[in-house]
Length: 163
Image 1 (cartoon, rainbow, N blue to C red):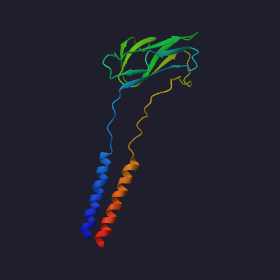
Image 2: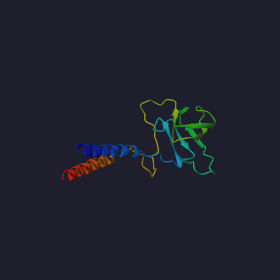
Image 3: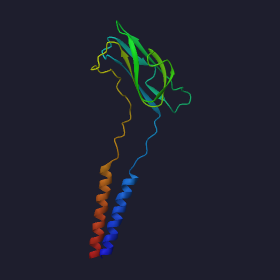
Image 4: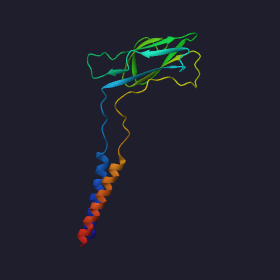
């Protein structure tokens, strides 16, 4: 009898561990990179910036994937540099040029810094109008639910064995 209970509990533990291992999802391949362009100061009093693309389709062989970033000074403002977050290659220009061409290798957030900008000002940014939601992690509650079901099935099996 004790041997049968031990076997059932061992099977329940193996099932629970298998559920944890198989619950890992593989990353989903992206079809495009998002390109966000903003400027600092956010009110645009010293200048603005834009990119010629909001998305780069990486699965289209006819698209070169290059993005042109342009900063335009305004009033007494002067362009200082680009601050670019993400993985990219510079095709032409440099981070201190007001016009630069980059080839993204990931999602990009580019901020044009203008002279006179204060660090406490937030850059403007276009809202992300993507129709997909970000991955939020593994659904732990599903794994726990399966483990509870397995324990319940094991308890029922033990009860039937005792009868």
